[in-house]
Amino acid sequence: MNTIEIRLAKKEDAQCIALLGRVTFTETFGHFFRDQKDLIDYYNLTFSVQKIEDGIKKPNNIFWIAFVDRLPVGYAKLKLHSSSEFIESKDVCQLQKIYVLKDFLSMKIGFKLQDHLLRKAKELNFNKVWLSVLNSNERAINFYKKNGFEKIGNHDFQIGKENFEFIAMKKEL
Image (tube, rainbow, N blue to C red):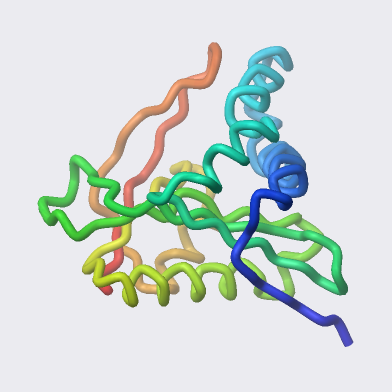
């Protein structure tokens, strides 16, 4: 029987989260990059240990880390007071990341991370949470739809030479 533990992340978890971010991003999005340098540059910008440490320290961010049998396998990030062009309310937060290693997806760790994140958002009196998901990532879109999120808009995001189309989704809390 596998033991699953999810807890709030600490500064000391930054190395694990940075590595998890790089590996899970590659598993999900790596094949979209024609130029590996663009991917490496994005890693260095988004998933450096220093960037994650700084993010954990910010009072507007809450990170969770998930373990299976004491091995780090995923993480989630909630950004508080994060407005969206698609939502008029001020009591809004953003589910910025739920990343789980591919080999552990069947253990429903993404759902468990999301549950922690949504409970915290509600506890902090936010009335909506929003997120962006790649419009071709059917697995993620279906995951969020199944959990009560609805599409609210579209937007683009560029990484290096690659342009990505995203769907914005929200959930009422």
